[in-house]
Image (cartoon, rainbow, N blue to C red; front, side):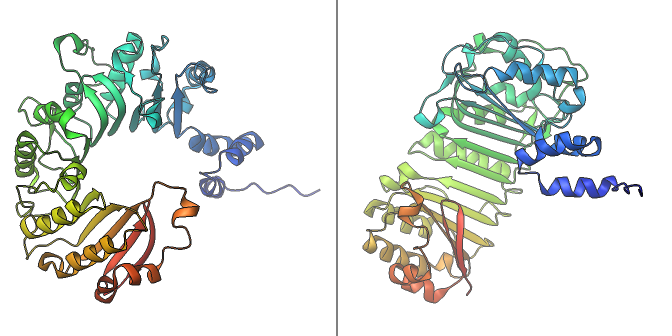
Length: 402
């Protein structure tokens, strides 16, 4: 019987790469042959989730996962993204995780009740686990950190992580009091000292009013992170002189680098509160997104004022996107938006984006029904103008060329 020819490893790797989003098939491949095991496990362990919520199905498997990674350190090198779900109450003791992920790139720390509006208290996390997470945040390979619905986190610690490239803070209640300061951590092969000054590339803060101290820490000369090369900035603005002043100060720091800006202006639009600054100083800005939300008369007033005062008639912006809540019954509102967008001199040469957010069941609200015919009814002048793209719930529906 002729011998079965061996398949070259690079072909096996290519086949497994095509299965990267199919965990069940990857698991079967890992057991099929030794040549399949390593490339399969690379994808299987690329993102791991540690849910520490008591009673959660994965809670009991966390210790087993840590045991596997401890006995097989090679698997830990495959982990690029770590998601830690904290319970609403105290966590159990876990230690030693900082040494298990030497090539980690992204950390996400969130609350188990985030979808119900709940939060997790940072000081309820067992001290051993907190110290390990602090160490991971300073790991030289970690470039991206996200926090969601966490109370009492010392955001100042992030300004000591000079290797970071992206930070997201959503519904985070900071605590930078003396009592919350991070304990000293000696450098080792896993958490070497951060560079003297690192360059942050992306920053997302929501809401601003809770996190203004963090912005102040970032702009402090003692910070190990600099904003002078920031490329993407997303921030929720409020009616507050302090908020506007801080945004203006930050804009001056990032004027020579920022390429993409997202402004969430829900409360401003709801009260028709004008934004007291223009975007002319952001010389490299190429894409602007303005999340308005409300489909009300004050938001129309706000939109028109914004276009007249905050965007100069001559600019280098390539795309400007406006985001609204989708309310199919507001035909008059959409026709007014149609008029405002088409008649604005500052939008004459730009490609427009319309992003709608539907909060109802997708199949009942818009799937298969929102098309160019609907746009011709709601915004006939914009359709005639062309050069726009429509998204619904971050799904691109269609583009109309000029």
